[in-house]
Every structure is written in structure tokens, then in C-alpha cells.
Image (cartoon, rainbow, N blue to C red; front, top):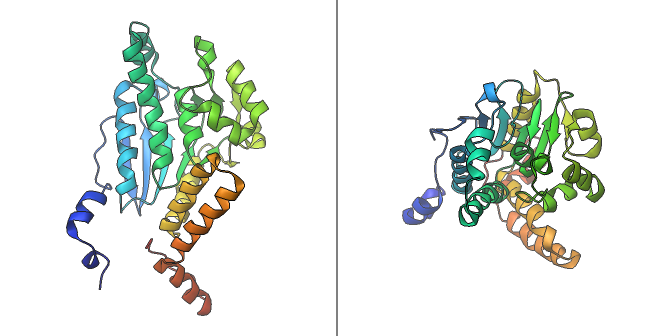
Length: 285
């Protein structure tokens, strides 16, 4: 009996989607072998974000929790840069004219993008070359893994424009990646973090050649997509949820999560492959 024949069609309709064929409006979206690549595609301006691209990214990541045909995600910028942050003319200029309710609408929208990135079960790999600033640095931070280059320049430059460094979860997430003191330095000064320094600090998982960073990120994502994707989603959930748990709570939560993973067919496939001295072919169920 197939999986779909065991499940009420109404339940499937409400909770499973095919997103490989999604047609993006404000960035590029391509899916190959269950790996989606999001390309921020305004290279002439170093790929800045707009109100529209923020909203579309937020909504797309929100839908990815239901996707059955996307198992890992790569985010990259077109050309020689990742993302220069919010567009000065299309976002920053209009913001200075708004009152508090509309400003809160904007800041909640940007925060909801990070929430959606953290809530989607697919691992996200950021391929970062050149400028990675402001909201671009936040998108990189919110990804699960980051591949950089020697020419990467990452800057949380909010204080350079008169704003606090507490933007889109930076004060909560960045210290967990690079440590409290280093995060404080980046958020107070807004200075650029170079590629080699970023790797030493742990912001980058590793450095790649500029011409290879996208291919390396897609290879990493493909390896993840070929793995036990249900279990990978559980790992991502637990990595996020355990920030707010005691050790005792985390151990109990992991016991429950691992017991659920032991019910999957992928767990049985891995055992059978071990016995047969072969490589398991995971299917995500």
C-alpha cells in the first residue's frame, strides 16, 4: 500500500504542496533534484531587497513547510555579491516618512521572514560572495549553514544608519553563532567581517573559491537532500527549539524526537543497508 493511499486526500490537500514549479516574481527560483536555489537577482545594485521581495520571500518560506518536492535550499546573490540589504531608495527613503504603526508593520514583516526561514524544515545553505550587508547579513545569519569566499564582506551595519543592532533577531541569533563578545563588536560598530576572519569566528562553515561557492553550496544541499529528510527536519526543529530549554528539557525532547524518527521507514532502510553492506537510499518517510 502506498503512502498516499493510506492518507485521507483532504488531509493531503491541506498539508502537502508541490513547489518545484513555483514562479517567483521578485527573485529567481529553480529546483533541481529536490534542491531549490533562490537567487537574489538585482546584480546592478548588489541585489538589494524591496518591500515586495521581503514579502514574497516570507510567504515562500512559509509555504515550504508543506513542500514535498523541495528537500534543501540554497540562497545566493546574482553576480559578484550576495545582498546589500534593504534598497536605499525603495525601502529606506519611504521608511523615514512613515509613522509608528506602518514602521512596525515593516519591521514585523522582516522579522517574519527570519521566523519562516527558521520554521521551514529544509536545511538552508547560503552561498556568500562579496557584499553581504544589513538585511543580507541577517538572511545569511538565519540560514543553517554559510559558505563564504575570501572576498566576502559581511556587515550588520544598522548602527551606521542610526538604528539599533537588534534587527530581525540579530541580538538573539548572532551571539549563538560567533559568541557574545564578537557579536557585540559587529552590532555596535557595523564593521565588515572579512571572509577569512568570518571563517575563524565560525560565521562561515568554510571558504570556497568565488567561482565555485554556488556549486559547492548546491553540492552540500544535494547531499542533505539525499539524506533522511524527515529526520533532518527534526534536527532543524530541535536546534531551534532547544535554545529556550534547560538541559533536562532538551534531553527529554530529544528522546521523544528520536523515538519518532525510529518509526520512519528511513531508519529501517538504513539498518537493512548496513546489514547488506550497501548505501541506504533514503526517501524521507
